[in-house]
Image 1: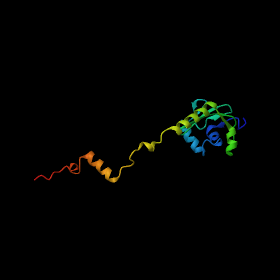
Image 2 (image 1 turned 90 degrees about the vertical axis):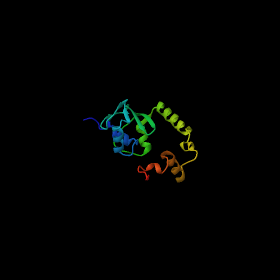
Image 3 (image 1 turned 45 degrees about the vertical axis):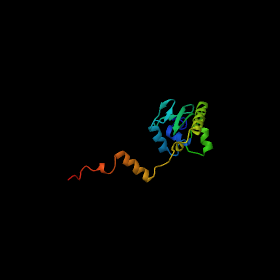
Image 4 (image 1 turned 60 degrees about the horizontal axis):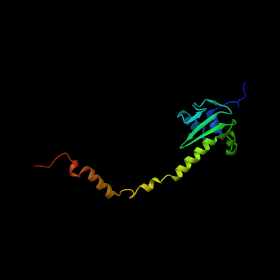
Length: 142
């Protein structure tokens, strides 16, 4: 029988390496195809071993890491960070994306007047519909 820590399920490793708070979240991300192992989409039961490359997409960030070690249990963050090493290309890409987000214009600054008041909304509705009388289909002609 092989040593249990020569290989490990990817969902357990992602949880132990603290990429996700629970294994259920790791499984969900794997099912959505947001985790790649050696460039291929992975299922939760896929086994990883030291030397494999894992790409994890978390929100806007994409991290590419090399598996250094396996762990049967989830430990503190400093211990979990010893399970992998992020590639220099991944670090540079994340820093560049973070810089771009910091320099992006604030969406709220594009709003000049802010939210319309109730009076403004009524005026807009009247302009779009043509007034109260246009809503009625019956006429009062005698």
